[in-house]
Image (cartoon, rainbow, N blue to C red):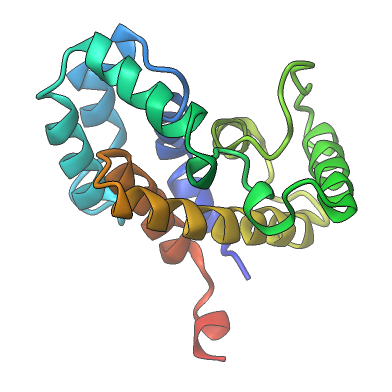
Length: 188
């Protein structure tokens, strides 16, 4: 179970994760963006800092090429979180429909060109949605976080094998989820 109050504390960082996981643009790498979003107490800080430092050694063109080579051409590095578990099975379609409904419940209008399990979109939803004090939010977020946990597990392992700088970014995202898990859920 996820602690929604704790997740709310880290909302800003989900905006950062969303932008960093989309196709890279120059403004995404402005140092103030990182400094304003993460402090040393953030659970993903060390990993995000490592990601940031590694990315600074590349030009924007190299970052864009790396992004495309990693996420667009490597099946095991897909940014679609239900793909790893279901690929194109019927269950994936059902899960996508549930995610779309969840987003709509919280006022997010889905872009026509994107699937609801796209990792940057999922992070953007966590960043933008207002869920505190919403009845049913804990149950709805349980499904969302289960999909994120499962999908990013496969993704982070593939990125680690490729020695990608994005490994550290996704690892920081996973550390943020972990910090938001309710303690009794961890002890079971």
